[in-house]
Length: 475
Image (cartoon, rainbow, N blue to C red):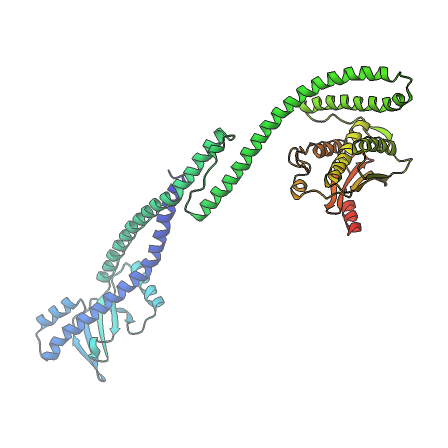
């Protein structure tokens, strides 16, 4: 129990209440001592009234009055005369004098604590103002043993009462905290365990119900976390199912394309000039399709295969991609321009870089065609001391905000209706396989620009500063 939050709360509450009571105890003892001595002064004044009524009283009556007042002597000052009203033999000399007419709280506390720790019985003189202004002052002598005993008795009763109050207060606070906080927390814990048993079940997502503001905020945050996790798990399951289906389709499609590849080999033997001109492109397209199926099967097992790096002409590769896209455009007013040095050679996997450029250029072409407005796609290539750079710029409508937020996330970064968002995700992964980066330099109503960086060294090249320079030049 003591290791639980409720047990520790109960203990701490009791301790704190006891500390508060101890802080109250010290001034209470000082006040009790002050009242005790003031009471003795009042009783001594009352006893002295008998002498004022009759100047002569016998010794037995005087002793009885002093005993009832609890003092040894009574001195009353009226006008300027100081008169010994009642007296008796004192057992010992006066040890100290206390004037009750003008004492600060600190002095009263100091004297009270000193009396508590002094065990010897002493005779003290106490001076105070008479009740109802019946003189200038009244002075008595008394012993301290009865007063100390009364103070100890009072202190014990105060401590016992404090302990009882502490326990009762702590218990009531414990019950209140248990009802208002501990039970809701345990409810949240039970819900978390229930949700963890089947996180795919949306019915197990928590519904915030706590009345405490902080706990309600925690439940709202937990609800959002569980909602996102459930959606992610569902998407993961769908992706796994889709990956399995794609692998099966790619397997069968590869077999079909392999058969088609055999037929294209015979077509290449044709003497027809038109066939001879188109056959190499058909062979190349089918070969890439076969490689894509094989890569898809490899992706279904783990990830994209490692690139086979060779030195290739970027101008020839881009021209091949652009020629395929021109066939897809038909008569639409879309212009393709290339700004690539004829002798620019770079190190990359030809098939994978072809797929990257094809995805970027195809996306740009589809975006422009969808607007039914003439446009232009420009591909630029250059190099510096550390990397090769490729830019694909279009005059399309720009990417939507949602597409920019999830640009390289599969099935979430699609920019057009019906798009899967796989093209950019695959392209980014292929470029990363080369140790490079694929980033969106800018996208707005004037167009979109993607930048590919392929490092010349063994490690990836940092492109942040270069992209910043590109954006600066645009602004």
